[in-house]
Image 1: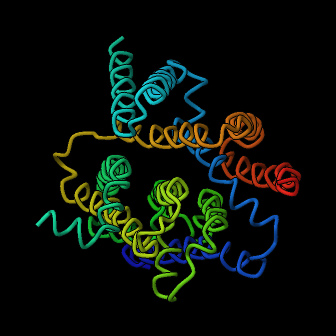
Image 2: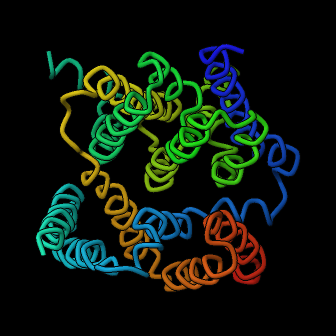
Length: 110
Length: 232
């Protein structure tokens, strides 16, 4: 099998897999649409998912080695403070990311 | 012209405005993916193709490392299915909202990624806007950020500077939604339980801990929140 053909097959296989994964809840949920438990999960999951994704994106592995995720935690801490104060999404994002970038930059200098 | 756009396409404007944080995360991340793709000696045109058809950041990054080693396709599928499987729970929140003509419905399902899910969950339908149009524009825009970012990274891999630090805007975005959700519902459980589940899941299964934590959360919600609902 040529390399290009192999790459294309991988992409097609992954595309089908991702579509099937995304379709799954609509198949299962469509049948159980009036099931109270499915409704409850659908209603409350976003709140949990947001924090799970926040943790996922700061990479738990970074907690176990220097600088122990300090730049990420500092960024999120300042973001929380500024967001509770001004409640402006873009401002909070800029502050959080800027603190993270500055801290990462200063740590890599040491 | 801009006034006309706002007047005649309020759904597009809302989608553009609400997808701005995602733009600053997915676009640079797409560039990073494109650069990495070309640096691993794959043909550049396959990068935007993969981003458009697979359309799952973490799955694509994991698959890339395995494609380099020419792993068997079923091995790649088996390794990435656990990375992508968290997407299987997103639809549960959108079953009613995504009903409609089959083409738009399947397009919305195919383009349902972390940021789309987060944005839609934080912005319930408004009565004065066509929500189906809004969902379509939002999904399309976020997909374009990712694919165009990838294309840009792939064609300019040799001279593009490293943007990867900007990807931190993504956890920032999710964190803002965590805070907003707390300010609206004043519920402390979603602030504590995900942290506990993440730690436990990471100790048990570090490579696929997120999926484990998602499943644990789904089970927790199904059993912990029902009593509250029947009372209400």
